[in-house]
Amino acid sequence: MSSEKRSSSATLAAEDETPKDEATLKDGTTSHSQTPKDGATPMRTSAETDGHESDERIPLISRGLAKAASAWDSLEELLTGRFHATYGLAVTRILMGVTGLGLLLTNFNARHYAFGVGAAWNGEIEAPKSDFPNIWLFSLFHRAVTNPPLFTAMIIGLGILAVLVILGWRTRIILPIYLILWVSFIELNDSAGDQGDNAYRMFLIAMLFADTTRRWSLDARRKKKNGRFPDTDGGQFRWAWIMANNLAIVVLAFQVCAIYMSGGLYKAGGAPWQHGYAVYNPLQTLQFGTWPVLSDLVTAWGPMVVMISWGSVLFQCAFPFMLFNRYTRIIALLGILSFHLGIALLMGLPWFSLTMIAVDAIFIRDRSFARVNGWVMRNYRSIRSGVDRAKRS
Image 1 (cartoon, rainbow, N blue to C red):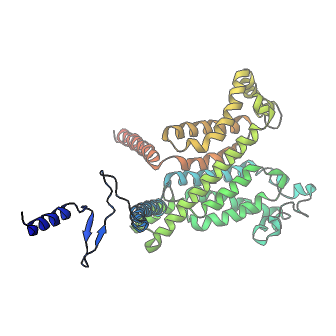
Image 2: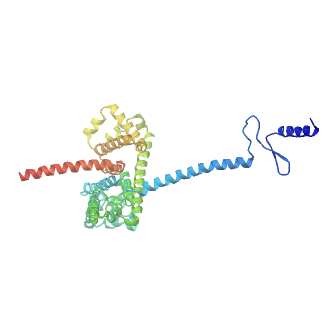
Image 3: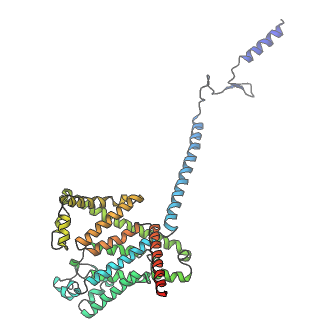
């Protein structure tokens, strides 16, 4: 073999022995790649790693923003999409009006001794314990209390306003006037009030921002004649009315749950409730044992006293958490209804109980009220048609 052939063969052999991970550059030099042997994962530079991680973060951030936007849309739809608890708020309005009217009627004969000039001995006409009579807007009854005929006329006027609240007539105008006059009246005698009066006042304030007349009211009947109710009333600001109504429901629900929770926790800290005999004590007093026969009947069996005492604490503390499920909500509402009916009947506190029952109605779904309303109307029409047929025959 010639020398030229041997040199060319050596050159080809040298080229074959050149590693595959070397790349010949234009200037004749070679560049070694970073590909490791034996199929190992290639190593990345810090710039490549940072770029890959940033690429992975982008989908995570976008998914997070999408979820936040979806949650915001759901919240916006919940607050401004439609009126909630329309039947429940109507029941709240009606029962609140009944509560005010009932308290005025049951105290009408003793109005001068409980709130008027006959109660001057307590010193509140001259120096009120409450700050409300010192505020001009809430001092109307205080200025008229020394004039019995005028005082009586104002109580009658307040009762008429309560009837208008029950009927739902011009409620946007009537309800604020009723609230002002009610606070002015109830604060005449601070010792005659109780915590039920405070709850009544707080609920009325929240109701100012709610549309309580969309069902079972004269306002709803009048609006239907205009042809825009209940789907398009409010015009371009309908969303604002809806949001105010739904936020008022949130406030009412929070107030009720706070009252139940605080009352339950306060009871749980007392020895009579812990040992299960707390119900026995008030029912055996002259102030709260209004029906001695019923009081003796309820408290005659010890285990019953324990069950009522512990059950009232448990229901009050668990009430807010039982609202999140339909079935537990039904149990909670039935239990708290029984609790208030017991207080009203056995302890002689009907107006406090009715106030709390009135606001508990917002936790009942509109569909449930609609079914009951439809059943009542069907039976009413059936009975009415039967009566008409009997008259014609």
